[in-house]
Length: 163
Picture 1 (cartoon, helix red, strand yellow):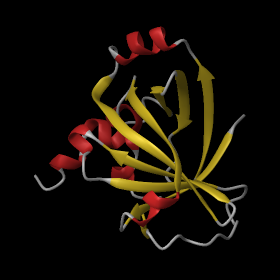
Picture 2 (cartoon, one colour; picture 1 turned 90 degrees about the vertical axis):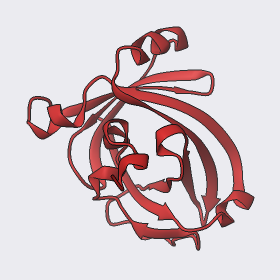
Picture 3 (tube, rainbow, N blue to C red; picture 1 turned 90 degrees about the horizontal axis):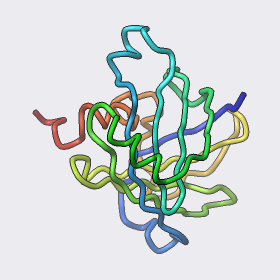
């Protein structure tokens, strides 16, 4: 079983850009939606992601917070494109920027399309109690706020939050 321990933060400035050493274009969608998880009909999200020239099928347990079960399986990009056509809700289009900070790899997601304007940073940890230094550009923690989960952004994008 795979376990993901991840913390998520809003990004408060563009200061991270100078430290970014790679950028990966991503398109992803979900084969289920928040309603199926909220109702208890399903216990995990099922995501299809194309990142650069690779593609994955990802299954993540529905727990809120920093620790969840996660399983990633490589799939051919051509099949991932076919699976994206079967997804419910909108597709997530983003650029993931990789930034090293004090020995940890931070993933800064710059959302595009209906989620344009939203920029969040995630860091994966070895343990739930691991201490780490926040970069100057990391603001409020949103790890426990469901609306910032990609699954939620697919069905209720950032551009509609004020509506």
